[in-house]
Length: 111
Length: 113
Image 1: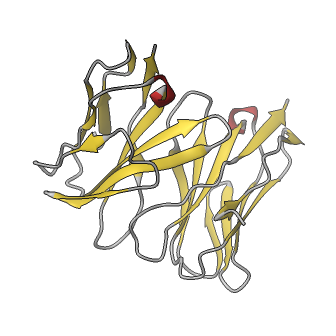
Image 2: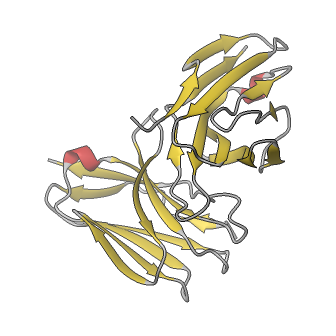
């Protein structure tokens, strides 16, 4: 079992729609979770962090965390073509030494 | 501006020629880390440092060295590069006291021929 699992995609949504990105993780001790956006050939950019169960909203982005199910998701409302990128899920490991990255979900938003 | 910088951004070298990729951050972060990113394999941690003079291996440390003599700098050293170290390298930093939000440098694309 991979430490962090994400559907590689591509996930295709029309402009203005809601994009839903999912992630499961295996480390039950993880307490901190992060979503990064990465454009091709560029560095990962932090877009959301979440530490408690439930929802956290920031602009068009909502992160959802369920530690019991070891599941974290990212919703992007009113998707724009500029949101087309790869989204990386990254839980912090139990010992807080590192982020464990999934291989990412590629999102394509069509005009 | 708060940032992580890396140099060089692009490097083409030959097998066995020692090289250093520099990383610097201006956010007074205790934690710094190096990753490599390869197609299909995602981001993999090479080395990390929890503070000055404290470094430890990540998931793929073979063929790499690091040092942390100053808080702001964390260079990555390839003493004898090989073609399998051709990759995109990222440096990152974060604080360790309140939040764990990690910020990445712009990346260094290394080609070893």
